[in-house]
Length: 70
Image (tube, rainbow, N blue to C red):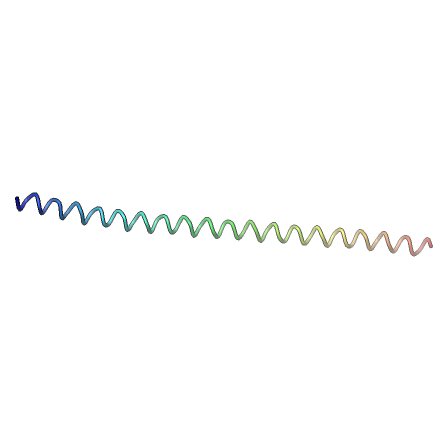
């Protein structure tokens, strides 16, 4: 009976380690996904700002041409 109890305790300890390692791995994956999401968001934000700036410059150029003609 003592041998069975020792095996069960050893198995429980191993399962505790598996749970802890799995939780740590999941946390690391979630952190990586969050960082990737923030990089993608920042990239898209920069592209949107660049597009807006280009449109503003194009509009300004058109206004300059119209003022020269008028």
